[in-house]
Structure formats: structure tokens, C-alpha cells
Image (tube, rainbow, N blue to C red; front, side, top):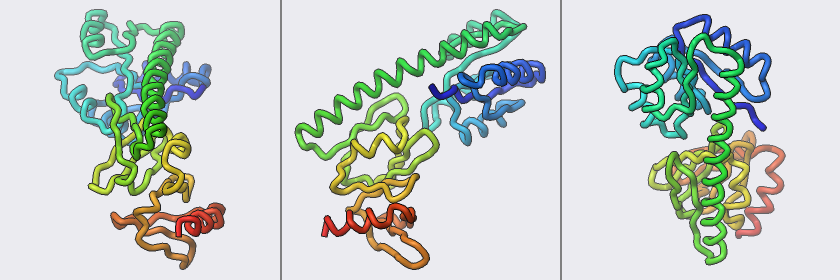
Length: 252
């Protein structure tokens, strides 16, 4: 099981120290990948790190933070609120918090909150993947040229012919389409190898799967590079070059 990636937003040094100590003793289930002292810093951190969980120990004057979370182009992180004011729990659960920790917090309450996050994430992924797999199996059976992609809170059906390439973004995959749209999936790139049509899609690099139909030019100067229909130039990993050559010849 991969640990939950979390960031902390707190003005309280003590809160950070307690959570950091918990992480050190429970690294199998929690990894703190950043911390911020204010909302502005926190939002910047969320966009760059894409955490699974946000641990919030801060007083909110308005709902701007939560409104900005709704605008993220990746899955909204789970929220756990921390406060010395038990009345703040009402606000926490109004914003769909997984848990509310009343100060002074202890390791037992933290571990219960983290396991609630793990359980919720597993349930969501299981349901979502089951739906996507059913759609992809149905498409394969009927020879439909679509792939089902989990995007935020919905599942989108994307024509494979419109996919220029797919790019790994940490644990996510970004689909770059011919109309300029970028769709982020909650699945990692490796999972799409067996889903995309292997007559046209090839993994040229650890970070990229390309659609042969969108290759404009292949450059062999100073390495292998594919120029695609949207102008992107992507490298072919050295260890994949021989297989790539065979793949292209099969399509000639």
C-alpha cells in the first residue's frame, strides 16, 4: 500500500511538529510532502504537489479556499480539519471533511483520520475503476474506438483517434487531444498500455505514450525524437528505439 501524500496548512508550529513526528513513526501510511503557513502558500503547494490529503489547522474567513479547490484540474484532495474550537467541526463537515481533530491532537486520533482517508480513497478508486473497466471491456467487444477516462468527478469517453499523446504526471496521466484539450486521469500511465489500441499506441518513453496517427516527423539526429501534430517533440528512450522501429515497420 502506498502512503497517503499529505500537505499541512497551519500557522501553528506545534501542529506541524506533532504531525511530522507521527509521519516519522508511521511512514508506511503517511508522507508529508509539504507545509504552508497561509492559504495563499497552501494553494500554490496543492497545485504543484497534488496531494491526497490536506491537513488544515487554520481559521477561514470566507469560502474562497474551498471554491478554488473546486477549480483544480485534478482530483480534489481529502480534507481533515484541526482546531481547538469544537464548534469549527460544523464548518469542517459542511465542506465534506473526512475527519475533524480537536486539539490537543494525539497519535490515536491522527491514525484514525488517516485510515478514514485510506478507506474512502480505496472505495472511490474501486468503484471508479470498476465502471471504467466495464466501459472499456464493452468498447473492446463492440470494436468501439473510445477509451473511458476518470476525470475529476466524472468519466469521459474519448475517441482514441483524437489522442495525440499521453503524459505521466506523477501518479496521474494527462491526455493531450487534437483539439487542444488536456484531460487528467486518476490512473497512472502504465495502466493505459493494455487499454489503448496497440495497433496505434506505443510507449516511447517512461513518461509518454504516443498515437502513431499523429506523428509528423521522426528525427534521428542526436537521439530519437517524434514530432507530433500539435507541435510537441517527444524523445524516444534509447532502450525502446529498436522496438519502436519494429512497431513503425509493422504499420507501413
